[in-house]
Structures are given as structure tokens and as C-alpha cells.
Length: 235
Image (tube, rainbow, N blue to C red):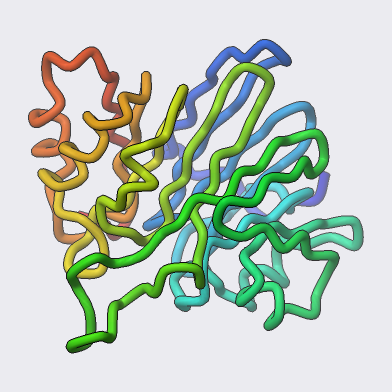
């Protein structure tokens, strides 16, 4: 499998979660960027060139949640893609890409790609925005996703406030939640939202300027395991 030149940085912390179909490896990289490895396939989510991808493999599957440059970074996509790479993205992103096959999966839509189940989950702002009637993220443009790995369901939020569709999620094993106001939630808002749908494990991501330890403290005693991972440049 192709890799970038050089050794893998030693400060990366990857986790392995057992699923009914084998191990799922989870590596938060930077900001909202995450790499997953499952069934011999590499999945890069919202890869951004500000992150350190030294030594990491190219993608079999790339998932993009929305159009903002810290989530849809075309130069980084070009570095990670192979001739066989497939992308999953909402239609607004798919319409702008001309690099590889794209599976356009929007809010409320479901599909299986490379043996992995995908469910589109709305991501948008309820209150915060550029001005009246101008939210930072409009409903229906971007999409969070629930990925199915056998009996394990992993939710990646994208940039969103605590919307009803997130609170209504069911049977989530792992959640990766952005907290970077005003465009997303604060640590305490994120904790309240996570309590509503009760994943077994949650990772704070996209937490620049926030203290993820406050998020963990707010979830103490709930039975939800909080995994705070160092994301270079986020604190």
C-alpha cells in the first residue's frame, strides 16, 4: 500500500475496536481529520493538508462531510487518492469533484460502499451564523455520516450544532464530535448532545481553542467512555 515518505510520527495514538467483522482501527489526525482501517481498507475522513500525514497510507475510500476548506481540501485529496479510490460525499461536494468515482449520499440516505454501510445525518446550525438567515452551515448542504462496520456503528458529526437529528441517533458505538464554536458546539453543548443519544465511546475532535477535558468532565458518571486524543495544533 502506498505511503508518504518518512517515518510515522511517534506521538500518534491509534485505537483498535473489535467488531463482529474484525478489528476497526481509529486514528484521529488533526482538526476534523480521521483515518480508519477496516478489512484491509483505508478510509480517510475530511483530510486536511495542515495535518501530518507522514507515513500514512493512501485511501481506498475518502469521506467528505462538506464544502469548507478545512474539510474539503482538494490538494490533500489528490495526495491521498489512488486510481481505485472511491469517495463518499453529499451532492454539493460531489458536484465539485472530478477526481475519482463519487457516491453522493445526502441527509437521510443510506448506501453500502465497499462493504461499509453509510447513513447520511443532517449537519447544520440552528442559531449561529454570519447574520440573520445566514447560518454558517445550511441544512441539507453538508452531511454527517454513520458508518457501519458489522455490529459497530461509528458517527462522524461534521460541523453542526446539537440538531434534533443528532439527538435522535440510535445504537451508536463510537461518536466523533466536533466542538469549536461558533460554527459548531461548545464543549458543554456537545456533552449535552452526546448524553441525548448515548454512544458507548466518544472522541472530541475539531476542538481548536476548547478544552476537551471539560467535555470529558461533563460526561463523567454517564457510562460513556470519553477518549481525548492529542490533535496537533488544536489546543
